[in-house]
Length: 64
Image (cartoon, rainbow, N blue to C red; front, top):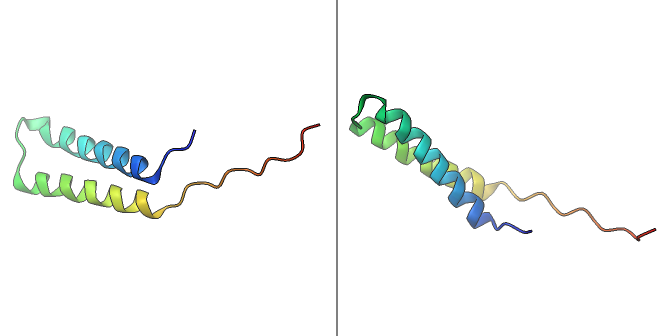
């Protein structure tokens, strides 16, 4: 199964945003600073996941 770097980046962004917003909702309100922090978390997750390459597949040797 091959997962594209687009899917990995999307999942990372959703998880980062959800984690940040769930922490921000502990007091039942989201302030502007918490909103900005969630946005920055999403952008950083997208950027870092996009930049890191996938692990190359192991070469397949002759079968015994």
